Image (cartoon, rainbow, N blue to C red):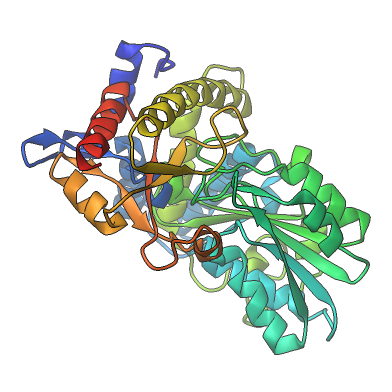
Length: 409
């Protein structure tokens, strides 16, 4: 696949997504719901079909399809390891980021004592808050929440530093806000956590589709993401430092593997989903050029970031020009993803979303499970409207969205 630097390359990329041929009310559907789940290219579905049709089996037995399943999973671990710059022995899979986080939180908490402290943030999706609240309730832990600056949608770094102490066992932080698009400096946050002897757990679900993850540069201890946010199936992927994973008191069945990474994977896994997750990474890599997969991913994300930034600026300036529209989150000159949340004066978020559907424009609305920051912004009851640009988003689609909101306002 060529790099989408021009109209023909973008058209070629869009051609990989059958969903883009859908029409509604006479309009081509424009999918701005990517922050809740992107559309899927043919190659991902083909990889899942191939596994189910030709290799479907359980693992670790002697017959060919079982051996082929083991080999596919090993390749997928390597592929996702390339995606996040880790070792394949540090990559495990699970139902989704939320389920993985509950599982890991339960395992880690077995070593914590009453009075130990955990730090979470107001910007985060509740998937990186509630699992820690749950184990805190069970173990008598203290949870401290870092404030967000509602004026610009960023973390209050002075408050983050103040919340960390020698009693902190873990900092749970999002790399990017799925509600506001804010990108936080998670390398700096992980360093602050390590300075006080705490672990860092990074939610990269909204970050991974837009910025290439590098767990070595971040120097985090754990990182979770979900393939369905970067053009794959509904499955979660997890990075955990091997030495930490092998020390964790993981709830598991006695006969199941005890070595990393399989000790984190309870029960039979979603093998076809694993095949699809790997295919999604390779789809992204094929957008770029380079000598190896990681190099191609770096090239692809550089190209996609440039396009995403251009679309973001078009979307932000267009919506900002509309009287009655209020935008939230950092401006385009600050670190952020091409995801924009807004409200329209006098029109509920649900009505905005429903009326845009009539124009073939699909956006999400509500609190997106980032309920704390949405409440802080004063929209707990009705929520926000959210529009996210993906690799297949075109300038024409952004223009259609802006014009549709202008008519509503």
